[in-house]
Length: 382
Ligand code: HEM
Image (cartoon, rainbow, N blue to C red):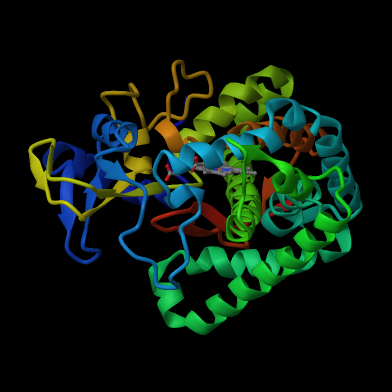
């Protein structure tokens, strides 16, 4: 079984190992925030939403936070509403459509003999699926990509600070787009997620316009950017470890556990933010009320006390309770969709292009930010 040596995440692993051993709960004065490195502490923070709140202390734009930034009981009500519109049955039924979209993307590439994995495969697949699920027509999906990329970059404080106006413009454009689509569905409901969200209610209460817009935005962003990076990271792994790609080609059932190991080693969402509601002691450190805590999912996923030989890439690792989809009340609602897309699309890619290989003349540009781990571009011959 190979060790992880080709991905730049490797550069961080030494630091994470050292932090887990010496300062597992560490106050980073540059961010004004506690960083939590060990699996046990990360799990504890995510598992105690009363002490470690998801609600930000204040919002620059004055709007209410979306579901990710809410605590119970309102969070529980909103989550129940999405559940009505986003059931496991609805997700499972997407299987044939995921196969068709993947094949259509790959058909177009067969002739050319090469592709850039991120733009031509990893992004378009989840974007098409979540856009169709929401009810966005195919011809309008290109605009989504532009807004979504801009908004995701904006999650990084430095990028947002550098171009605050561009961030706001994209946010406004996306919201007014969804407001118009929701209005159309109020007049004429359709069989799509936007219409289901409009109709869903909990305790007789429906979503407010603001909450509807927040949901649409979150589902769009969370629904494709993260999965795109999972697919991209997977192709990088299969290229780095041809033996593993061979095993998966020979036994496609292995893809399930391979995806979990890719999620563990290259978590496309690399952290979660919380805020202390009261004074508390975490692994010997006193955290004051109001202070922020950043759970370092990458470090937790490499914690040797939870994962034996964590730097070995083992697609048959059992158990594999990584924290890439979070844990506790905010556990990712889209995990079944992300897993389904990867489970269908990756074996199809490996089967159709048995000699897929990285083009060494193109260097691999990666993103390793407080929120995302992924590659910007990955050129392969097919
Ligand atoms: C929440 C990761 C795909 C929708 C989360 C959280 C994580 C995460 C870590 C919890 C954050 C926290 O605790 O603060 C990922 C990863 C994905 C992925 C790694 C792909 C590989 C998706 C998809 C969708 C989605 C495809 C929807 C279509 C959501 C929603 C929440 C969430 C709605 C909020 C849940 C709540 O607050 O109760 N995701 N996600 N995610 N995710 Fe995902």
